Structure formats: structure tokens, C-alpha cells
Image (cartoon, rainbow, N blue to C red; front, side, top):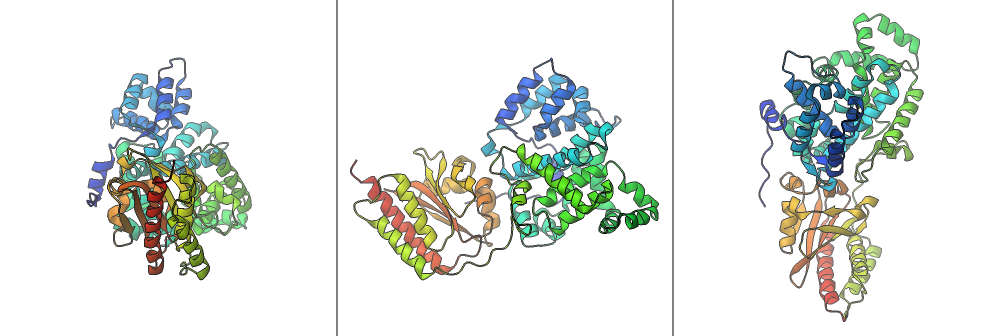
Length: 506
């Protein structure tokens, strides 16, 4: 299998690749937008509201309006202004240029970061909408588009999102070091350059300039915000620092606060980063931490109600968990297979090897195969059946995965690894030594089910033709030799069971 094309390593190279990258729109959204733009009875506000439900198209409209206006005109500060500047015909032309894809073919990482942006927009409306009623359009649009510089990055290279989650959130590595190794440049600098090139609204540009060039101002505000239990003392500290007090109350900070709350909650509600943004929000709103948290949690739930994609993670789900729980957390090394598991494994394998076939249907056979693989020591298992044309892989059995794994459907045409495994029986073992080479060639939805750097993919054949794909790991931990040997023998048993099943009397 060929090695993926290397990533850019300089700001200029990244800007050249990302600045004009077309962003996909889900097919149903694309059709809905076409109907709305063709309806001349709607107001600009109604059209803007409809477009904001498709954030990637909202970005393209705003980007086009600001670039078409020239450097002498002020950037459009809201989507409604951008629409009036472009006109409906120009917007329809933009829509026709945007790729319309099924939801399953849009990279999972892009869909996930769009969900974070929509969560941030909900936080901004709920927390600051009443205070900034006169600036409603700017508040809503800028909070939704603040993370827009990340969208083309994760559309072109979705594997970067998983790598960042694993290394920064799970392993606790320094973000600057991870960004340098993955991108070659600081991520904030790249976002600022894209925001300036696209001439995004000034509130967005100000936020990135603050994060890149004036972080000391933010640090001073966060230091005061820590003393949330003593509001009078906080006010005295702000009164003693007039420039800081003026900056803290700027309306543009609401955009930074809303996105900080949404992005930090992606990991955990009570992690240090989440608490910093919650306390800063309390300083801005002059509210105690408990009340801020209650409002933030309520807005997260409101945001989750709008999400329709079961494959995505929304932080509101974690509100049902114990307070110290984490979505991403190191798991203890899995012990070697216990004697009881070996007894179960032998029993399942004996059933697979029975002649004539002991199974009345494919469902029974794959359930036994799943249990045999799990008993061999691999606790996360996914079995996918291939159709006759090898044009679709459909999940048949799963163990140890999210409930949504049972509905997973993959298009092998979108993955070089899957095409290779379906062409002939074979096995791919992922490890830290080759994960960078092959991760980009795997579907994002599959990688999301198996976070980690250790994974087995094995295609299984009946009468020489691949009919099934088996994916398994040990909770992301290094694979021990005993389980690997048992896995190899289990695969032999499953293939013999498939052949025997194909010969059964009809």
C-alpha cells in the first residue's frame, strides 16, 4: 500500500492548500438550500437562518462576500449582510459549486468539529444573547464561524483530529509540541492567517490575535476569574487595572468564551480547561460558578437536542455520567486471557468447526465468531459483511463498542486499505510504527470506534472469496502475543465455518 502524501510544513504551504478548499454539504441540506434560495418570497433574515443550519455553506457565503467586496470595503459582520452584498443568483452559483455528499462520506472529524461550532453558537445565544440583543446577528454568526479555519483542515486531513485527541486530551502532551510535529506550524497562527485571508468578521480575527499575540491579557483575566467566590475582590482587582477591565467587558469576548466552553467540554466538564472558561464566563457575567455551570449545562442539552448524527459525540451525554468520568481516558492494560476465557474460546471454536454446520443462518454464525474472538482476549470486536459486488461493508456483529457501531456501513471505494483487504484474504496490524502510514487510508467512522494505535483488520474468505471483514483490538492497548496466537487460530475456525455453512443442505 502506498504512503499518503506528506502534509505541508509551512504557513504558506498550508494556506495554499486550505484557503480555497471546497467544503462539502450534506445532500439533504444541499437540496433544502436550493429550494430556499429559489424562493423569492423569503426575507434575507429567513434565508440567513436557513443557511446557518449548514455551517460550511455559511462560511463560503461570508468568505465570498468579503473577498468580492475588495480590501477597501468593511468585512460583512453577519451572514445577512453577506447575502445582501452577494445577491441570490451569486449564492445559488456558490451552492452549485459546493460538493453535495451523503452524510457517511463527509469526514467524521469535519462533522465533529461542526458540532462543536454549533454547540458554541448555542452557548453564545443562551449565555449572552439577552445582554447583546442589539448585536444578535454578530453574536450568532461569529460564534458559529469562530472555528471555521479548522474546517478545511479537518476536511482534507481528518486523521489529525484523532491524533490531537489521543495525544493532547488522552496522553496529556503539550499542544504546542503536538502541533509542531503534526503541522509544522502553530495551529493558532494558521487559524489567524486563514481568518485574515478570508476577511472574517473582526470579532473572530480579534479572538485569534489575542490567542496568538496577547495571551498575557487573557492570563491576567483568568487569574482574577479564579477567585470566583469573592466577587467584591474581583471587582477591586479589575478597578486597579483599567485596561484589563475595559477589555474584559468587550462584546467580542463572548465569541471566545462560547467556543472555549464548547471546545473544552468536548473532553470533560470538570477538567482544568473547562473550569477556566467557566470561571472567566462568571467574571464576564458577574455570576457565581455554580450558576454559570447550570446555565452552560442547560445550553449544552439544548444544543444536543438539535443534533441528528448518532456517530458524533456531544458533551451533553457526559452530564449523565459520574462527574469525574472522561470520554477519553487511559485504560489499564488488559491481562492475558484467563482460563475461563480459554474454556469459552475452545467451546466457541468447536461449534465453528462442527460438521455439518451447526448454524441455521448467518446471524448465528457471526454471533459465534464474535464471541470466539472476544474470548481469545480481544475485547473490542466488529464484524462487517461484504455484499456480492464488494461495494458495501455492513456491520453484522459488535462487542465492546458504542451502540451506534451496529449501524455502521462503509464504502470500500473510499478507502485504499478496505479495497486491498477485500481483493484477497489478508491481515493488517496497526501499531505506532505504521499508524501514520495507514491511518489516513481508513474511514473516519471506523477509526472513531477504535481509538488507539493498536488494531487488527482481517478479511475472511469462503471458497477463496472475501465475504467478511473482522476488526478487533484490546481497548487500544498493545496486543499481547498470547491473544494474537489465539486470534490467528480463531480466524482459521471462522473461515472453516464459513465454508461449511456454504455447503449446508438448502
